[in-house]
Image (cartoon, rainbow, N blue to C red):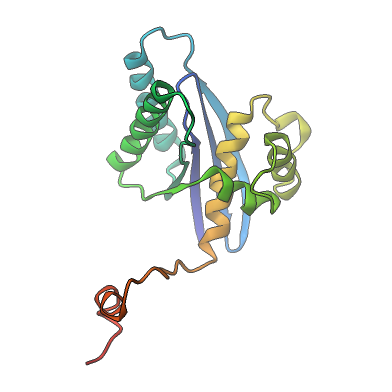
Length: 184
């Protein structure tokens, strides 16, 4: 069974994307790249271009699922707001095409690829190159592309692991969250 995963690294100046084809338990690179946005002066025009380009990528590659990197919390509130808007527009493009979306924290992506949540972008890119057997000439200069590919690869790794909700406040909470499994 084949599955195509679109990974997105949101950004307001440069947005990365990476697409994996998964057949069985093997993932392979389809493509990766960046959407250059810094040439557009208006933040709103950038958001429109993000929607247009992500929708175009979706229409070209027909991904089954999208994995997107969650914004990390910085000190600059305006930057965070703009990054959140960019992420929201990319998510909207996927929603408009009925594509399920999963969000991953940068640390979780790094752990899935390198085993180290504090790994540098260079380490993530190098491991993805080795894991996916990407020739050096196909590696992107900008880490936004490999960060996006990392989100897609993290999603691939997570596909083999069942999601378990271990957060219960009480037995009553457990029963409420598992009503279909509890026989009274």
